[in-house]
View 1: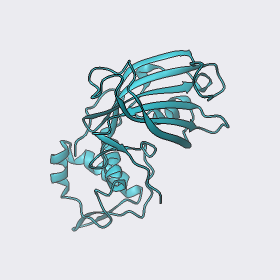
View 2: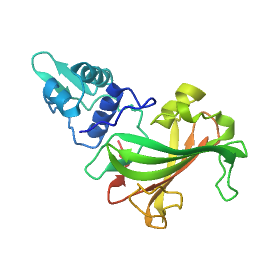
View 3: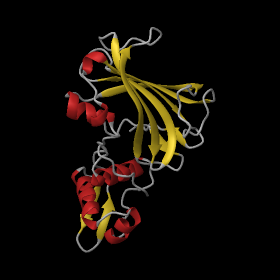
View 4: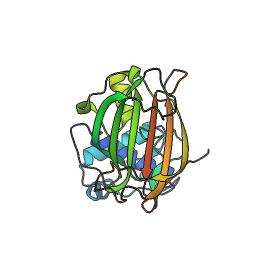
Length: 236
């Protein structure tokens, strides 16, 4: 397991660890009843302090995903809630899980393209383009359009999780989403570090996201490298 580097708007390190473990539980890499390694060994493997690890484990315990038994160890419990900052992020490494993070490529408020599907209530939107990672593996490029009436987006305030940004700075939370998964060609604006060249046919996700209104507040497009990641939807 690896954690992403700390930037000014990255998730707190203990939440990065908590989210990584939640995704490993969801992916089946950590199973119900499994005993985690000793805390000092885990902290050394992750390159973090014991204190940071214990904050992450406390978060998992609060969610009912971990049982901490004095003198015995820490045990995975899958009967708890899988509420997660990245609960709606469906891409995983081929081996399962992985902590999402992103590099922002551009942020621009502009008129919505005429050929876009209808979403929101404004003729304008904020377009955010990002390069996506799972752990340190580049897996996708994405273009997110937030409806112009949803609020002003300041690049310097954006974090790895846009949904967390919406809640913290714009006062709304994405409550549901609809994905349409197919194939498409990598866009011309894809940066050189992305693993696929523009024009390459690859996996493609269109997503409509709703807050508390009747119209979707967000529309996004994601092109992902199918040799590095896959789309996973678990039914429970």
